Each structure stands twice: as structure tokens, then as C-alpha cells.
Image (cartoon, rainbow, N blue to C red; front, side, top):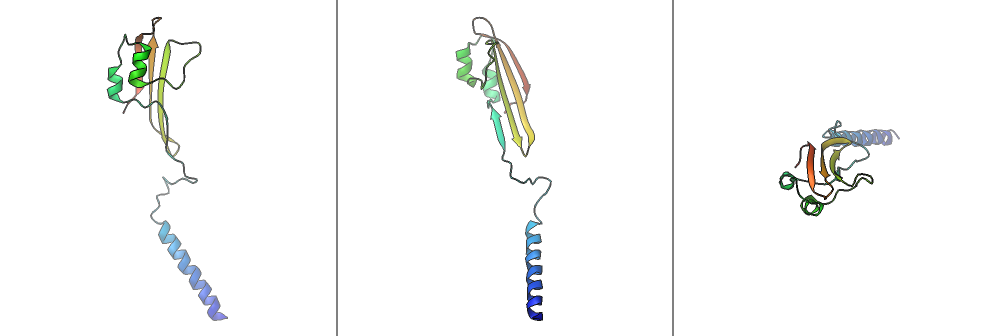
Length: 118
């Protein structure tokens, strides 16, 4: 009976030791439960594409270079917004916003950029 109790205590001790050693390499400041995957949302635009944009391009030419925006304004057909956000572990890693304004002939008149592109 005493041998069985000693064996159970020894087994629990070994199991706890192995468990704690296995967890020792975990950096708890970056560990999240449940796992939160990296989320990239929006239009991916790099510097090469952005430098091709210039005043006077039509909507079709613009769409060929950087694509169509994910959403458009119902009441403002003369504005396209391209927004990108990259989240990792609920933290915003990278974000940018590009706004294009068109005239009545659907040609770019103004380009605004906030944030750093890829």
C-alpha cells in the first residue's frame, strides 16, 4: 500500500516536472489563447503601383493599375478609398489609406495618402 502511494506521488512529480519544463520556452507576453491568426484586410498596394498613379488617369486606367476599391460611396461617385490594415494578436501592425478624387470626366484630380505602403 505504501509502495503504491509512493509510486503515485513519484509519477505525479515526474509528470509535473516534464510539463513545467515543456512550458518554460513559452513567451507569455506574446502568447494568446485562443490562437488569433494574423488578419490582413483591404487593398494591397505597393510603392511601385502608387508611383504609377497621377492626375489625369481615368477610372479604368486606375483600376488596371491598383484595382477597384472594396467599397464605394453611394452619394460620392467621384471618390475612391483604398484602405489596408494588418493585425497580429489584436495589434495593428501596418495601416495605410489612399484616397483618389475624380472630376466629372472620371479623371483623377487629387491623390491623398496616409501611412506607409509596401
